[in-house]
Image (cartoon, rainbow, N blue to C red; front, side):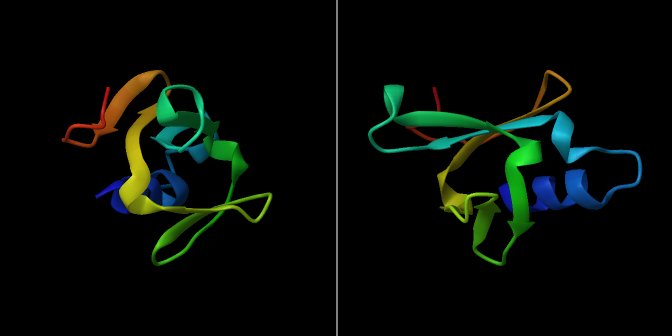
Length: 81
């Protein structure tokens, strides 16, 4: 589901992925979570969100997506604070 939301934000003519913030599970980070800006996204692969630094983040690790300061998607489960 996270990929569908990101695809929409990237390709919809009235949306802008750079106005989004994506939070994902990041082992070793504070609270095991990390948030990036949508402008850091280089590409949306079939399985991975790929960042400018050639970092690959599996979609199943994404827990929240905010766009224009509104929560538009949140993963259900135990690791979603």
